[in-house]
Amino acid sequence: MIRLLRPTDASLYRAIRLEALATHPEAFGSTFEREREKPLAWFEERLAISDVFGAFISDELVGIAGFHREDGAKTAHKAVLWGMYVRPQARKSGTGRRLVDAVAAHAATRVEQLLLAVVSENEAAVRLYSAAGFVEYGRGVKALKQDGRYYDEILMVLFFDGSDPTQPR
Image (cartoon, rainbow, N blue to C red; front, top):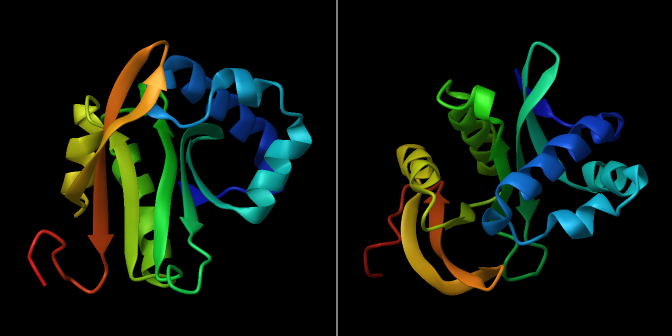
């Protein structure tokens, strides 16, 4: 089951978010060290003001993905899929695709395009996003730095009007 997380889910969200940051520090803009110091109220507030989807198997939260709409007058037509993580036991089960599809369906009624950035070395995630209809439109060179090592990010977009960002205008 996929559903929006509520502030009452904060302890579940905190646990999976910290797991994601600890096990894949190269994949996220934030860090385990930064977020583990945050009180539960910080995670409650984050869920109150953000659209974060959770994937559940039975009562266990096994995946998360966030949606954030840009708020500028000239950028409100765009949103970002962020913080995607699926626990190892739920990978290759379709959970990741269901999360991406849920965020995309949510976004399609609110914005014209959904953007994301994925570490270029995360080939499974790149395949997942491509299969869901996202296309690469650029690359962030040395976008993240973890333990002295740089990581490039692939920038991807899903247009809800069917246009192709790889074609000239």
